[in-house]
Image (tube, rainbow over all chains, first blue to last red; front, top):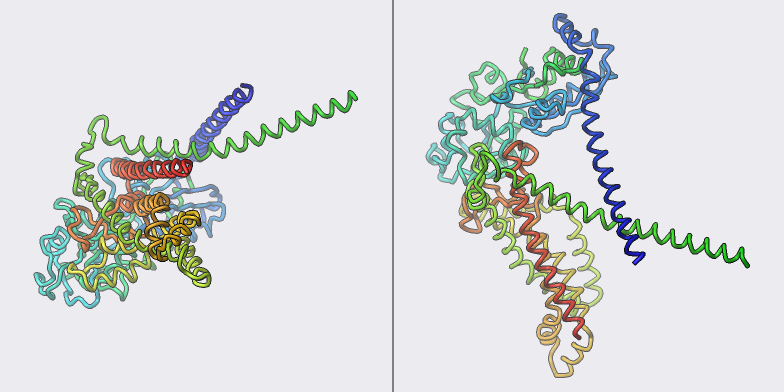
Amino acid sequence: MKKFFNMKKIISFMLVFTMMFVLAACGKKGDKVDENKTGTEEPTPEVTETPTTTETPDKTDTTALAGTVSITGSTSVEKILMDMISDFTAYNPDVKINYTGTGSSAGITDAMNGANDIGASSRNLKEEEKGLEQVIFAYDGIAVVLHPSNKIADLTIEQILKIYSGEITNWSELGGKDANIIVVSREGASGTRGAFEELTGLGDVGLVESATVVEGNGNVQATVAGNENAIGYVSFSFINEKVKAVTVDGIEATPENAKEGTYVLSRPFLLVYNKDTASPEASAFLEYVVSPDAQEFVEDHGGIRVD
Amino acid sequence: MKHVGKNEMVAKQQKDYKEKVFHFIFLFSALISVLSVIAIIAFVFSKGLKPFFGENSYSFLDFITGLKWDPGTESYGIFYMIVGSVLATLGAIALGVPIGLLTAVFIAEIAPKKIVAIIRPAIELLAGIPSVIYGAFGLGVIVQLIKKVSPTGQGESLLAVICVLTIMILPTIITLSESSLRAVPKSYREASYGLGASKIQTIFKTVVPAARSGILSATVLGIGRAMGETMAVMMIAGNNIGGLPKSIWSKIRPLTSNISMEMSYASGRHQDMLFATGVVLFLFILVINMVLIKITSKMGNANSKK
């Protein structure tokens, strides 16, 4: 009998203990976010205005900056952003910038909830997301890639749409050899897939059901490189000798053409933030990304400069 | 005398105290796993059932019988994924159980010790290989081989998934079957030999039937493993966005890879739907576990009767 009571006591104590632990953890998380926000926000409004007017980039007037900036969002921008961050923090040693690749939608949602300081996106903001401020820091082109042995060199946007919607299923219909077209696409809600479907008009008709779906640009490239009848689409930075990028409507998939707008399959890279809550550190970084120094990194990674 | 008595009392109290502390530690450890299960169930179900209730809800029937998954157009049907997952699992079991059982019989009954010393570490190694390596192997070798013979001209298929899953469930089936074969009392074999049965007759008529509940639970665990495998199948399944598999050359999209492929990018309803997929997967695993518990409790009863 006595033992039984002890057991009960112990269990109830345990449960209370764990509950307390869980609740405490929850509370801490919430507080932290708030503290960070309120602590760094208040001095912001006036400070953010001043740097915008001065032409010189951050290096001279941001020496007093200190704090942490968290960026979450698109994985497509990772390479460019990581280089920018290490360059920026080299000049501002007291500023720490964390980047986590969570996907464009997640990054934008985080920016709206205040879960990050800056959200990174590889697609334009949707209507319901328009409350955020945006800084376009690069353009990216989406290249349509084939196996190098495929003789087809040009596809119209119409043909691409028909291939991806399942209307054209054999390469012979496009003047190629008699073989089934292996359609390779990306996972749902991938930024590149969203941009591709939007730019081709595929969003309205829908992807063919039998399409192979793989995760990430690298896997698309690998799958296309491994199958001579495959077609896929990747960011410009993933074009290499293992796959062949076709011309679209006769326009070559080059950064120049994408920026000029003649190449139809291109999209912006942008950083989004909440104007009212942006910390001075975040604002300084947002200015930095369009500076000539930062734009070098865009170019390094096959992106298209905005300046 | 008085002092000694007091010391004894203190010692006894200390002992009691120690007992209690250890009792507490054990209980705490046990509670961690129980609480984790409860937390996971609560989280997955609350997230996964959300889209089917309230305003602007998605029809559960459309979800469970739908043949197309395209978040862009708000189609969330997983029936073709369930069919794909089940077919892949059945295929892997149909190939893996006979191979695994024969291997187990070979190790437990027939093979000389020297050969066992080679086979057993190989199987243990097979069990320890990370699933992403299986996936890479499947993509680099199996998919390429299938591509050459497939009428669709593509290697990512139900067949590729079955091949890789078969290899992946082998260690589970072999080790569990082997230990249940070894648990069969020696007297059974002696009685069988005594009646003039040959070695092969003894194995198939006496030892394997006596170990059948162990072999059955090995099979059920294999089913669980095949059903829940994610990374390796994601790389080789093709993950089509709709349509039932028509042959072994067809692409499939297992429930697991649906979740893992899109979770990192998804938001809003799309994310909830991925959790709903998780609920369905969870129910499958739950049923498999219940069957397993039934089998093992039966086995326990059978043993106690002897």
